[in-house]
Image 1: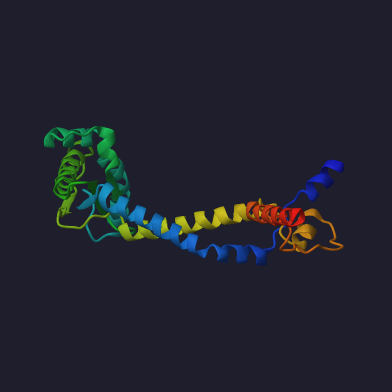
Image 2 (image 1 turned 135 degrees about the vertical axis):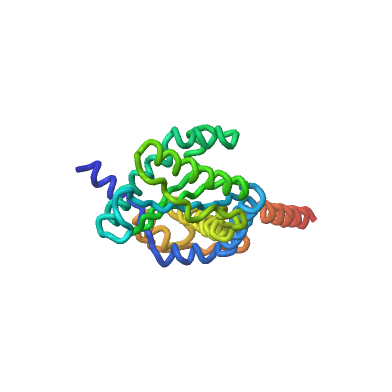
Length: 254
């Protein structure tokens, strides 16, 4: 019970009004931190991070035994598309692409650059490749589509998917998003500055006035003594008092 009472007595009491006032006092520091972090993230995104480009090839999946208008064909084609997603990113296909193009990639590194997407209620398989070179991304995407189509026809006893769209190499970079990164950096800087101010406020136990005595010590103030100008309040006052004492001594000797 004693430990619990001690813990409750040690809890930090937060006055939201005072805390808000404390934050407003240091608003210039918050603005400065926001500008600095925004500038840093902008510079890093603009000059340090390597831009990445994407190129997409598309395959159209058809079943070998059904017509293109039947409901069964639609269901079979959708099911085959899900199977082809596994095949396209499989090791045999990617290793063949690496060999055909002679690129300096491993199965794992090339797989990390590939994104496959099958739009709902469709038999279209999108093969998207991301790379720092837009032309290289296009070449890889097209080669994956060609190799995967031939592999599916040879190994799965199905009609080869038709390449209905080759990749493009004239698109802009998809990353980094300079504007988005700059905004995130600015918000992060503001949050960090406010967090520092809040923490400093919570752990500041300096007693300035009578209200602080009641809040931080839980004691009632019965009275206060004003600080007179003649009282010692630093080195400057100490020198002034010394000079006055010296003058008084000289007068006494006279």
